[in-house]
Amino acid sequence: MTLSQQELQSNYFLEKQTLHYDVEQLMRLFTSSQSTEEKMGESIANLSQDFLNANNASTDIELDALAEQFCDSRIPVDPTDFESYIEYLSNNVIAHSIHTSSPRFIGHMTSALPCFMRSLAKLMTAINQNAVKIETAKALSFYERQALAMMHRQIYNFSDRFYAQHIQNSQSTLGVLVSGGTTANITAMWCARNAALAAKDDFLGVEKEGLIAALNFYGYKGAAIIGSELMHFSFDKAADLLGIGNRGLIKVPVDSNNRINLRSLLDAVAKCQEQNLCIIAIIGIAGTTDSGGVDPLLDIVAIAREANVHCHVDAAWGGPLIFSKQHRHKIAGIEKADSVTIDGHKQLYLPMGIGMLFLREPQMAKAIEKQASYTMRKGSFDLGKRSLEGSRPAMALFLHAGLNLIGSKGYEFLIDEGIRKTQYMAARIRAMPEFELLAEPDTNLVVYCYIPEPLRESAAKQKLTETDRLLISQFNQRLQKMQRQAGRTFISRTTKKIVRFGKEIPIIALRAVLANPLTTENDIDAVLNDQIQIAAEISLSDLLADADNVTQLQ
Image (cartoon, rainbow, N blue to C red):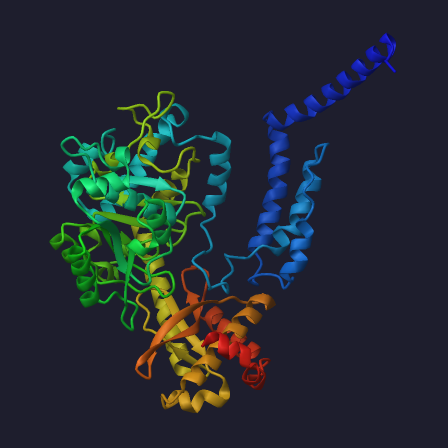
């Protein structure tokens, strides 16, 4: 059956009317209206403020129940009005989001943010600059270079002449702004690999000819990256992506304070040289992720120099100690590293999504430079030429603002206060029979465990058996899960190795992070008391009866 001309015409006008209505509604979403934006902004501001005022770490909703709220995969045909969508967000997402700014959320490397960051986030979205290209980030490209130079100077402290020469020189790269510490570490290893296996004579370099051809040309049997066993897992990713494989990532043992064993590091370097492996980089850590430990950076730099190898410092966590006169000595040697990673969303108090790689040698990033005819042209100021990432937002707004509105004195206070509160928590743990401090904190992470009452006398006399340790681990795992579920406070957990009975024993430990400026000593006490209260609900006899769990830990 065919439609008549009249029916076709009628359907045409009906569809046109519907389309016209939809287009008008759609176009209003793209049209700037102060009254509309103010109304939307007020709704968001109220929602944000209610969220930020919450004291508990989270709600106690079960994860399975929460997941059930997000099982519809159909896109709405008709647009949802803004008010209805905000209500949906409020009830389903915001209500059950983690209060990372809560003073009693002290388990991860996230914190309260300065209030001006929220206004800048709105501005960043409004201007919508793409920082990869000068044609989409005209002033921002120079602004970002300035912010990175300010941090570079804080690390390396070169002369005025050096910064005048390089800060706005398109051929120089003092730093690369990326989405996080993982990408910064990967980029550092990329630079180091390409520099170690660069073009020479008639060989065009690893980036042109590949890893196998590069190793063959230079006469190597393989390649390696060397660092402590507490290296961030981003180096596993780097080893994979750069083609050396995880077996090429050599992890050196650490001492009881979570610092790399220098004798073992020297042995690892010597073994690589004996096996004719190309050492791409030696890694020093300024603030391990699990415990905040700081490697002896001056010694690591000296070992790298002797071996003529790139030295990279992963200071994603501890890098901001450069602002503290009292604590900077803990990361002495960072200023001699060939490259340094710092994570802005950690102790620079910037929003998520800001990592930085700093390069001692301004020409080093040329080893990874790429061009394209439509973007990132040779000789231009395009920031994307020497970066792993392509399109990215104007996150430099947050970095530049933080450095100016907080200032070096402000950052010094924040770092000093974080470490002071860490020392307070460590002292409280030492003084309480319910807990055991597992390592003296270097920075502002505390690693400890809860000791069940029947085992405290043995713990005090250092007579815990291996089975006792396994039970304590299981107890702490249960405690941490129950604390997370209750949502009043939050501590994370990690696995540490301790030497007992002449061998290494892995134990589950509690992990506190003291970086939130809003956290007080009363909050620290409240977190510990919450753990004591929750621990009273755990039956040690049940754990003893659960032979499968003990076997699993063994």
